Length: 365
Image (cartoon, rainbow, N blue to C red; front, top):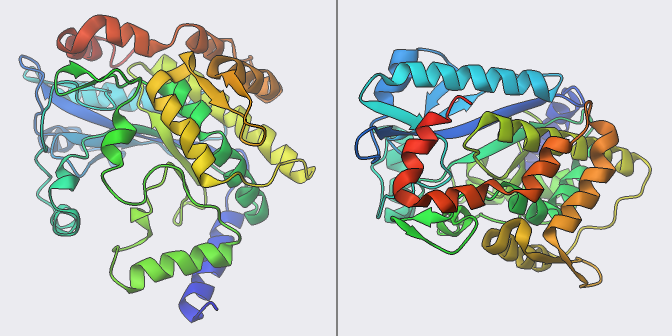
């Protein structure tokens, strides 16, 4: 039975979600700062200080920073702000260092230095060396629905589709200077921490509040921000935060993926209102597809979560794109192009040594 703390938290969650404007969107993007000569990690704090913009913030690893946009009514304006923020970061780097968008540093072997912050110290005490290995960068998309019931319905529908979205965005084939054979090694690195991967079924906001209260009151976590699943309700913003996507090398790739995600979310919200969304699938079935997605990307096969039928991930994505296109002004041909020619194949052709110079060149593209 819920106690007063979890009941109050559940009420706050519902109120925060209800205060959002349906259809609005915002981004967070994690970026790395590297030395131009060696490509190895450099201190991001000096870059953040030189920029002096609250949208550009230091992250847990000392070489990582985060860009956060404001809330936008449409994806195109959000991408434009993200592109402007990347330009600020590039200008703040100076001649010795550069910024790159890489889901995993392709050359680094071993833990990365942490930022000298209280939070980093606390997480280091809780997670030991593992936290230093979390030099991973994602594109996080915040989606607002303005209604607690709709938000929960879309949460479960997007949860089912995390493997498809991961396959589309996979862009991390290298680690420690070698080809891992995967389309994205990022979730493998992240899985060293708890509360990663496919999130649990949430039966109600009361149950979600009870779970978070249980975690925090016993000291397992400091707060709900350590609920690190690949999709989560955001307690402060009242959004669904999609965290499954690898950060993209170029903002035109970000734009294509984000426009698709935004349109897909609008489609799922309509299906919820019509009562046409299926019940949540078992977590382990989604996780099975998630493994295939990180290994093979769009070239692999995914299983139907109900029937077990195997279909190419590319075909599943094409069907989703067709279904969502009516909700995307201007269409979704740009994301179809990513399915046909996945960017990870170009990254793999470059190899780990040539990748970082290329990433610096296309950072503001």
